[in-house]
Length: 328
Length: 280
Image 1: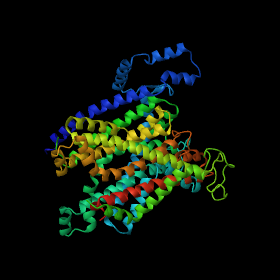
Image 2: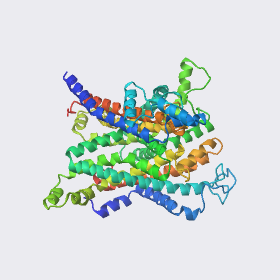
Image 3: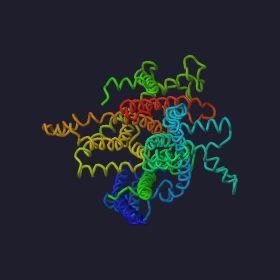
Image 4: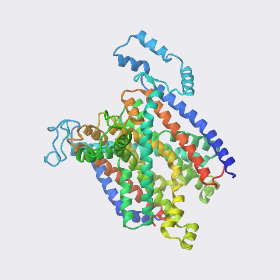
């Protein structure tokens, strides 16, 4: 196998490209934090109700806020290198611990939504391309355009009205029934019931995107020689569609995956707020309300890092899947 | 290149695009004539709370928990959506086009630096960055517009750069260079007009995205506190979701219709401007 050196070279190239991006993101984050009105001392003083000039000064020197900006920046970098995103005075705990507590909830929601969107989106895209120009294609086109236009927070509220208020089938918020103390299978079902509505609301937009992308690339692939060859061999249409065309049509989806990590994180902010889902998005929203910028920027930084990492993984995946992708 | 009549004709023959244009026309009319049709502040109490829609001739779409007229809110809300949508898109287009044109036409080091800059901006989850920017500045129509514009330019920059890179090798550009045209004239007079088709299509999607972002911001309580917007109406109606769902359904439907209309127009423009890509 000659794959290994190629993949090692890809890893090296993507790492070299990612380093300046990471540095720039950290710098932008730091200066945004400096631009934010008030600092940790103000926040603590506001929380306490009142503070004398001496306590404020003491607080500022405790958090290093009386140091020159350059010193503060070096301290910030030093913190980051020690995997610390700073301290949240309002929650009275390190930002990284706050984020670590909320990350699993968000990942659960985002991964479920993404899997849902891929399954439904690809299926709809294949159906649309198979019936291109006919009634089914037209109907699905309108439906996907509607999905594309509906804001996640509004459809979330509508789903609550229908499935929680009217039908009473599904819970309207939270990640599990509080105080039910369920275990095993019952606990799994309980979590699943809580997951359906928020994951569905979040997935809708991506279902539309994937369906449209897959439809377009299936139609593109359809005219290529190898598909004609497969047809000439006498293979059935469904076999050609599923075994020969689908893989090549789905590959372009990976290129947009990096962008979608950012978009789905942003979508999670509103959807988690609607469903009181204990995740990063709601933490970001709470941080906005309490004007806790250290938490907000920690989440922003983490999100950027997730996007960078996913982009690197996509590069690797493509280099592995498609040997024609050359080294630059 | 398709003729103008060909473009217009194919757009006018597209029922979906025409439906979208009609809805947009109504939304813009509402935005323009809201102060005439519904004079006074739509945030003022005008009747008793919780008048249900279609039960009172004076308040056709009912009233909310504070006795504010829902229809007046929706029509006035169109102003914020249209204003933020258009202004932030104009900003995003201006910055994106300048960056993309400079990178694509000049190439070399300038290109490398600008591509890097674009990539850095694209690592930020767009809506999250908007939230951070708006909450650092005070929420107002101006800061919301600015934040959405700042977040939206990279897409346009990438698009314009790609177009410029392919167009600058073409004969008409080489001819213009041979004639001694200035660089500015070549960029804005010769190349840019030929990149307008994809820019226009993206612009319609950008307006839709901006309207959705503004609505989500207002829904989260980060909108302009002095103005009524569809997002803020949904946000305040949320507390009465179980008893008066129409307070969420009605402004949300206005939002969905406006965004759907923009996307229908965008699809129609795309089909009309790229006849080769038309549905097969």
